Image (cartoon, rainbow, N blue to C red; front, top):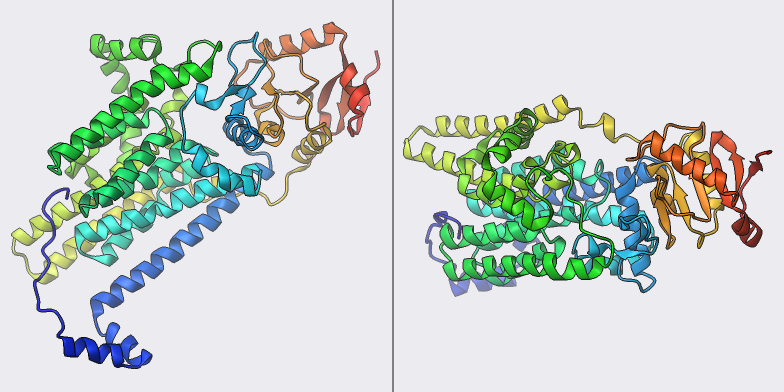
Length: 539
């Protein structure tokens, strides 16, 4: 258990005669007897509301994320994971050409050469049933929506109240962080750590250590850096839950997993692609060793970055949805120290953008801490021996503060609902781009200037982003005069790439509907006869 377990009255159980009477009663009588207990009525009703809320969440956010994909509102990351699973479905070990970092290498590299996420093997059977990005988006919505269930079970156990536990679960589903991880950030493996963290704390609370072991193993399988949070969780179990042996074993498992993944597995899969780029940590050092050394030897530089104004705003928006109640359980918040340091220590804006995918390992800890902070407030009220009306008023005020905090974050950050509304059909420009993509041969290598088209091109072995070093693919899709492309590369880099293509004499320039331009290799056009409805440029 985490702390003081709630008091359970020791009343005498039913006699054998009473049990026999209930068992021999008619179904209607048994139903009435069951619901004669108001506590049972509350518990069952709250469970029903929770299941309905989770179902609605999964349906709504699956639909929203799929609509974003179909209408051209997804970018690089969804394409990366889609290509990984698509290649795995064809016998390759989650290979992705989009992960290649060296310009002289055009072959594929396993995603495990960037991040070690063996949880992919558990998701792959579901992807095999329907091999499209939509499957990944639905699985993510199921994980994030379903995470409300172990949170509810933990809160009910800790607070002894089904209605209050339901409020926490519903606030989690309404949290802007939950929404953003699910939709704005497309698809990421980190989303799957959320239900596992909730499950781990529920297992700790109920002394279900086999379940705890399963949750910890699942956390380790999500991503290599989650192992650092597992180490912090083990420290919590050893010192706070007072299960020293289990805590030490957890810490040892996390340390071994992290070292083995970072020093052995990832380099083996990475091959000749060079070191992994860690954006935003250059001021500390290069590589894992350099960054760790910088944390220890450059505390003033680290402190300057961590306490910068954008980082303080990040912490504010992290805690305001739970009305800062999480601060009343600092020992729980300490479990989130590793992923929070990863965010706050970075100088790369996308890392500390509020509710980016890196927040996923932090959010469940914040909610667990808020539940425990609420429980501690309730115990303080009890010790003050206030009148029942005053106790109820205080509890209601706390719940109102929680609801207000979530609404404030949603309204101030404009997270809901405007940014989640996508049209059911793509606009004419997007439709024109998708029509071009549909006409390209499925086995052809493709370079795309705009990240918006990558997920739609991902079901092929060779896909790249247009840059000064992109390979000479069979087809190069550029935005031409159609749209301003969304890309990480500068206009100068892209212009240099297009100039190199035009000067090579190996390509035919095709001008397509909507202002898009496709450069097709002459040999590919003759060999594959693509169904492109484009006009060959003169000269």
